Amino acid sequence: MSTITANLSLAPDLELLYLPDFIAAQAELLDALVAEVAWDERMRARRTACFGVPYAYSGIDYAARPLPPAIAGLCERAAEVLGERPNSALLNLYADGRSRMGFHRDAEDQLAPGTGVTVISLGCARTLAFRRDDPAGEEVGLRLAPGSLLHMPRASQRAWRHGVRREEGVGARISVTLRRLLPRAVGSQ
Image 1 (cartoon, helix red, strand yellow):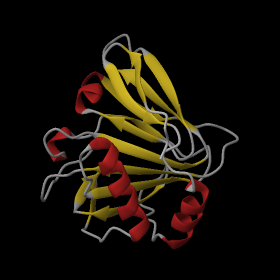
Image 2: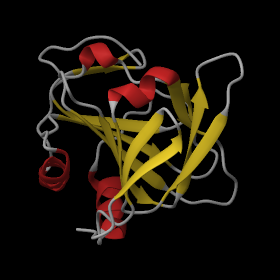
Image 3: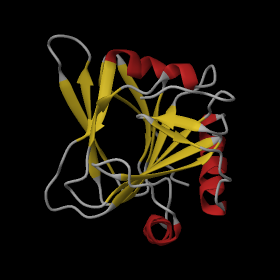
C-alpha cells in the first residue's frame, strides 16, 4: 500500500482522501476485468457491471452477485484504510476518452450511515471534475492516477457534483466504485 496519504481540499468545503498508489499491479487487474467481466451495455456513455448487494443506479437495477475474488480483495484493502467494509462494487468501463459520466451526486439514501463513496481507478489517468452546486458553478478537478483510491465523504457531495468529461487521446479506464449500501437499497443517482 502507498505510504503517501493525502487529505485534499480542492475547495474549502470539498474534503477528499486521495491515495495515489493504492494498487501496484493495477494494469493486470484492468486487463483481467476487461476480459472476464460480463459488461452491461445499457448505458450509452460507458459499460457497467455491479457486484455485491442489489443496487439501483441511473435507472438500472442490478441484482445481487458475488464479489469476484479480485474485487473482494479491493474491498478488504479499502476497509483497512477507511474503517468501513464495502458490500457493493459498481464498475464503470470507459473504453477511451469519448466515454464519460455526467455531473451527479451519489444517492445518500442508499448508503449506510457514516459512510461515503470510494473510487479505485484502473488504467489511464482521467480527471474527475467537481462542480459546485450553486448558480456560480465553480469547478475544480483532480487527476486520478492509475491505481489510486479516492474517498468522498457525504459532506463533500452535498455542495459539489462530480463527473468525468470526454478527454481525447486517452485509453481504457475502469473505475471501481465501492459503497457500503443499506439492505435492499433502491433509488438512482
